[in-house]
Image 1 (cartoon, rainbow, N blue to C red):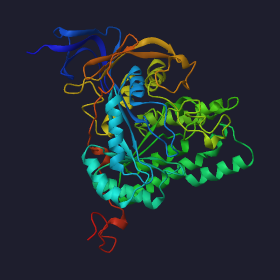
Image 2 (cartoon, helix red, strand yellow):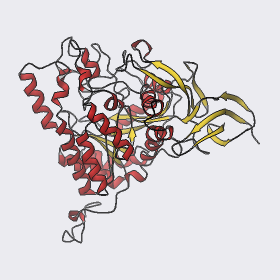
Image 3 (cartoon, helix red, strand yellow):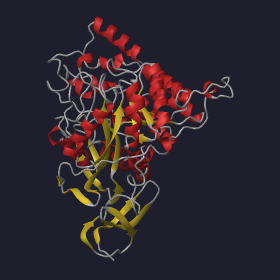
Image 4 (cartoon, rainbow, N blue to C red):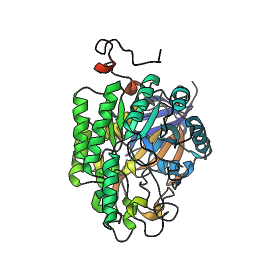
Length: 491
């Protein structure tokens, strides 16, 4: 028998469903054996007193992405994916962002070139559609989905990105016809624009007023409208970065009615509040993201929603903008809150923050941590069983955690190119000390050993999450709409 390339020996293996003392053997980048006293390998990793977990799967990250206003975020694929690896994440799905007037196919090609040059972990793309023309939806989209880009993001706010309800329905129907999942940034644009103008007209321009400009009701209203549109055409949806208890209630009701509505939140909504924006001068800009961080009562509602299953994953929404003229201060040294780029870095911090809160502090167990940060994201986005689990036949993407190691976040130790961390001064217990990608040890002893471009693209089908219920609304059922056939191609 061909010898093993690697054996991880003596650790506690943790998956979404099991915890066991076992060795893990790897050959040709794949897990080939799990057991006790496995034969020696070319490389042995001592995991005694440590937890052996699947590498994290972060399904919401903005990398080397230009905003609709033309502002490039701070990270390259190399810097962002290295930061991810240091934090225990071995797979990231970022965005190929179309803006108005762009060919979606060309946009995807350009992002492939960037990732092929820099990524050190494996990756896939969601397609942001801001201009759903007939050519995009009928000619470009079908080919892109067949090529393995099986998820589409839309925005319900932002002047240059938002889709009105009619265009939103166009995208939902095109996704249904091509077997793709739709994800949405759901906030009511009119409420936000109206509130922002009212604040600025009265001289309230500091970063903290960003939180006031995004009314709580704007999230729940947009989520409800999105769900209604998706139900009309029988298209499953994922709701991104849920931040409020009211939003959770809408999602819970829809799921209780049997609709295929999935949802996620992010560490900023679990650990920060709007008061974190209340800093001297413009420094609160470092904590600006959309939706904004809310209240401690919302944090508790989100934790409970995870436990109930109303939320399925926790992603980073990594959106790195430096606190200088290249990022947060692009409009000058004293910008108003509408002129400041929204977004926080998070690829490195996501897993340690969640491990500390869930496992070290005892709110949940290590199996649930793995489920919400690795296994469930992989399943929802068509990456499982290759990614997201420690199982025979899966890619050997593994993070070995020291559950006793304490680390204090600091601006000086940031691995991405943002230049600061919103978690500075926060100490967590539990850290991934060794990270393995397809059998290669890429992080160990605080050092990274991975060549830029060594990450691989992961083409993926949409999988079960994107399959319609097959339960048409009355308006789409020929039995109740006088025989009209409203799906498929026009006659």
